[in-house]
Amino acid sequence: KAGVTQTPRYLIKTRGQQVTLSCSPISGHRSVSWYQQTPGQGLQFLFEYFSETQRNKGNFPGRFSGRQFSNSRSEMNVSTLELGDSALYLCASSRDTEQFFGPGTRLTVL
Amino acid sequence: GEDVEQSLFLSVREGDSSVINCTYTDSSSTYLYWYKQEPGAGLQLLTYIFSNMDMKQDQRLTVLLNKKDKHLSLRIADTQTGDSAIYFCAESAGGTSYGKLTFGQGTILTVHP
Image (cartoon, rainbow over all chains, first blue to last red):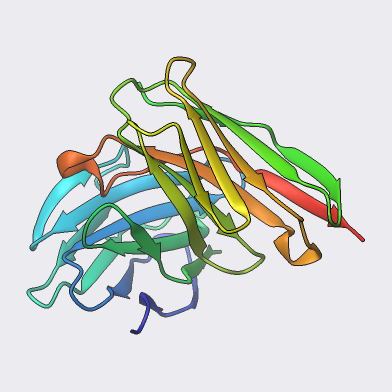
């Protein structure tokens, strides 16, 4: 069974630009969650989508948004990038209690 | 609010047991998890425990939960150099919140030959 995949794996952007990250969950998993990992703040929950609806939301500004498609694939978008948005963005999928993570997208904002 | 705390560093010799500790504050925590992260990689789910359990064993891993003290531990028996990584404790409230994990800051485990 294929694991969670995330594209792209690495991304370099400049301040003010926007970025879209993609996540394909494990087949049969309807829940997709997104997390931001930085050395200073650690792992922080961004949001969770279930059956195309946002079910949970973390404490991030409105520049961070996401969506989920009917095939459970999810995208997250960050607009007006700031230097502090540089991070590893992790996506996780679950069918029940276990969350399985993808390898992450490393975003660098210059 | 939710808060999860871990000690930052642990160093052990190969073949010894490692014990990584975690405390949490949310009384509604239903599931508690242990994840492993190796350099440049995502998170690997090691094991999890439901809050009505005291202990769970899975091969070299033993999880102990003291719900009264809100204390969770992960014991790795016969620790190997390949176990060197960052270990994260995490909790969720379950129900419609199982997709929302709150993580500790991670414990860096170093295994010396």
